[in-house]
Image (tube, rainbow, N blue to C red):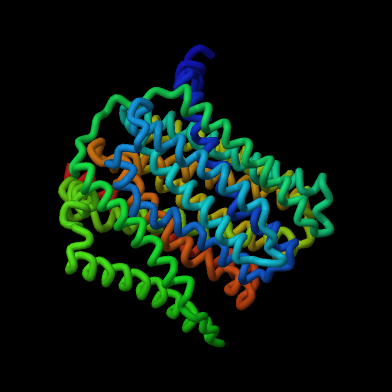
Length: 491
């Protein structure tokens, strides 16, 4: 018994561990407010399914966070006495709180535009907070304890998702969500915003990491670089959102046109860079050094395998992310009400994810990251097939609960293993920037595809869609085995 306590329980005890769990809570709270819970709000507001799934593109804030991560890695926030990491944490947490309150005052049934702005603001603040918390976690402990910290961080993350997922839906159900009333959702989101105080308290009681990073650019160059990045982000989204929507009958043409819009927007930003550099309004030669140095450091350390590692990162979570976007819509269209979704999907399901996260952390500690990574990816893909069975079966709460719990244990296991893997890839010299780059890659392709999941379901139906999402996870298994053999051969 003492052996079991020492091996499996004692590592998770301690005030530092609790603070990491609270920061995980702060990171997880906004997520479902812009995805899962938001999709229920939009559904009841009468928004079309294809439009609801397009809201998942707010997740591009997580995919593009590497663009502003060097600012948060190198730029000293004005509150020097508090510390660089802690001052940025305070800023992002207060920004998220205010953005949730702003969103609560919008009404998607009347003006979807303002709701979309609110969702983007929450996503931007949440992605920025993730940059700092990830750096804070990696810099606060040695690599051998990262598995434990990652598990506790993910536990806090998932508990927050219970609050913002099941909690918000229970609140909405209690207030009478069956007949759409915008005030119901206003109060729900305002109550959810108060839970950001958990993260603010955790930041207050946390110590600034002792690792010091060199400032590679002076104050004037920092301001110059900050201005250029913010202007670039603004121009990118202005161009992207104002390009005309061409609705082709052929879905492939729609997909290709969306890719063109993104590439054209990036091209516009690049052209802006050339113009500003030509007229000496912005000097970016040293400004881009914070981007190049972390990337070159990664290439130098992993050499030929670096490209394969980046492909693995970009595809690892594709199966569960693509499937997860339509999950709530699927439950509603299958005939389950909001309170049932809150109980089985958001409550029991997310506690199952916490259990999976602990199992994933212990697995990494006992059997290594590579094996845990492989089995996490395999289980996450296989459980998607179970949803295909639910889709062809009659409404059955026990069947749904069993499948959700199984799926969430697998997803939690895979998530914990992946966080440990990403943490092991980072260099302490470029913690925030490299981890932001890796986690951005992780979300870009899955989020882009998931934006079309509603249209895909319309074309092929739920059973085929769930099987398709499972097949997407198969290449990941081959990539993990290839990298495992390559690392053994090079060691």
